Image 1 (spheres, rainbow, N blue to C red):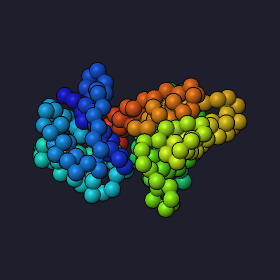
Image 2: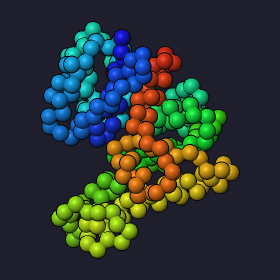
Image 3: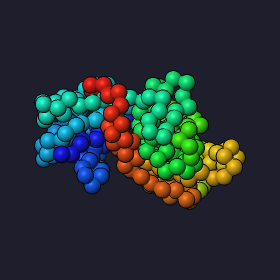
Length: 253
C-alpha cells in the first residue's frame, strides 16, 4: 500500500503518494483560492486507500483544520498524523535551543539534506526565504529567515503610496520602470542574502557547501543567482518519509 505525504505551507498545499518505488509526482494547490478545498477533495477522490497519512503544516490552523476535514471525509478509517520538529532525526541534529520552534518544513528539508553526508546550504524560497547550514556530520549550524521576493514586493506595495504595480515587472540589474526596478530589487535582495550566506558558510567550514533549493520560487532564485545549485521540490516530503520510517513521536493531526 501507499503512504500519503502532505506538506501544508503558507501558500500552497502539496502532496504526493509514496510507494515501493519512492515518492511520486508532487501535486499542489494554492489555498488562497476559494475553490481549493473542493479541488483538494477531487484530487483525493481518485487516490487509493493509503496505509498512513502524514501532515507537515506551517499554514494557519484554520487552513490545517480544513485540510483535516477533507482527509477525514475521504478516509474516515485513517487518522492523519501531524509531524512536529524535534531535536534530531536520522543524521540531522538541530542547533535550535528550542528545537520545537524550528519550522517543520525547514526541519524536514534539513533532515533530508543531511542524508547526503556533505556540507549543505539548504535554501527554501516560498512565502519566506529560509537558509540552513548543515555540516557533513548532520549537525545543524543555524539558519536565517527573511521575506521571499513576492512577500517583499507585496510589503513595498502595501506601505508606499506612490509605488504602483501596473504591469508584471522584469528582474533586470537596473530597471528602467518602477515595476522593473521593484522586481529587480526584491530578487537582488534575495540573491544577496544567499550569496552572503554562502560566503560566511565557506569561511566557517573552510570550503564551499553544496547548495540545494526548494519551494515555489526556487527556480527563479536559481536563475537570478547564477551559482551552482540543485533544486529538489521533494525535499520536505523526503524528510516526511524519513520521519515515518523512523516511527517518530507522531501526534494526531
